[in-house]
Length: 117
Length: 117
DNA sequence: CTTAGATATTGATGGATGTCGATGTATAGA
DNA sequence: TCTATACATCGACATCCATCAATATCTAAG
Image (tube, rainbow over all chains, first blue to last red; front, top):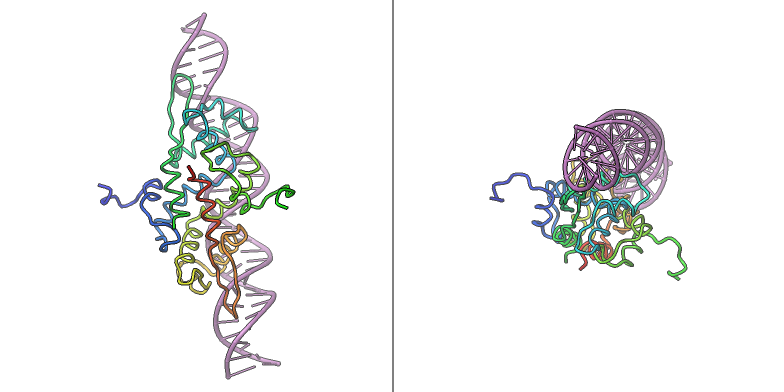
């Protein structure tokens, strides 16, 4: 079914391609993968991903994340949305609290694309 | 000597840190690494890196790179400058031609930071 | 149902970024 | 020295993006 798909999502694309240094990345693949890197290419979002990933249980509550930054609550919410929509973070609501978790396969695939031999 | 350095370059920082998912990335480290990801987080620059890396001899002439895109020569020159200043590409002038080469260790270090276990 | 707390959305704003045309600089050859 | 070619820089423009204050939404508790 994936073969019939004309446009791949960033997450699908990053898992499909041979490493950057192996063969020239096709233009449409590049367009598809770039948003994933863009999502990571911000110091606040890098720290968010890192804090979430390093948290006990692999997930973190937004309330804790807000406290880790000197930024307004809407700004953190915005960054979390960017990471979630890029496919890097999963989102679960439990009661009043929202928990985010890192999709490690996506990070692994991205790393393989960038640094793969 | 590296210990006395107060601010690390992106390239130095990316080689110094444990993986994202291991422990929370410090704020200053995040600020330092982000530019490297920003440099990669563009479809044109992703393709540039890929084309250069996959070229015979591991380097490519700007003249060839220009032909690979439907963009103006100044635009390609700009993207190459961004990649060079980020520390991802080396630059060599031979006669009238300029050759760029990928610094693979930097890509590897970046991959280890993102996807390291 | 009302209130309080947690998170998301909206709208606005200043600054960064991708792109181009025009121009500058350097090198090789005639 | 003059010209042609390769590449970089400059200045301008449109778009995108990080951030905030204000507000909305959702849930639990009373």
